[in-house]
Image 1 (cartoon, helix red, strand yellow):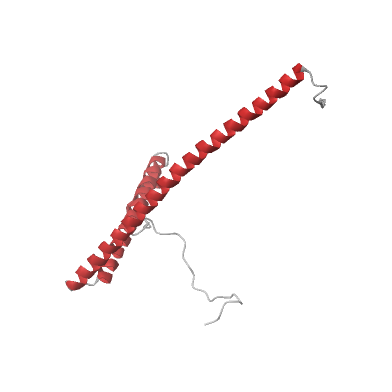
Image 2: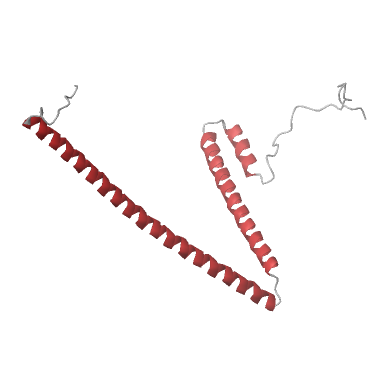
Amino acid sequence: MKETRYTADTITDDALNALYQRVARAEEEADAAVAAAARLATLVGKRSERADRAAEKQRRRAEVAESELHTLRSGLRANGADPTNIQNLWAQIHLRNRQWRDAKKRATSAGAAIERVQQVAHDLPYEHARRILTALDEPSGPAVTEPSAHTWEKRPCTNESSPQR
């Protein structure tokens, strides 16, 4: 819809009222946008101030921790201890704790696997279930409960690509 361009001589009261309403709506929208921008700036400013305070607090905590560490290391040296050795001992303890947690996880998962095998073993014939459970109880790995019918022959290697002795 193309709007008519009015001049001061040709504008009607209705058209003038419509123009005033459009200008008033535009002013209201502009005021609302300015108010929203002001609220946003205030909010961002508050958050920025909080972030600056938190960063400053963290910086102070880091400075205190560094000074305490320096004091601790100096005290250890004054009493004949080597802070590096203590640090290394802590690292070893940390490593052992991690290894223990990993071993515990492996043992737990192995125990769960054994339970699953035991549940499945109930459906197997007795002899197979006995061999599986016996193998699981062996600490060094599965043991052969019956002698194997297969015997290995000692033969020289005939593969051309392998080195000859």
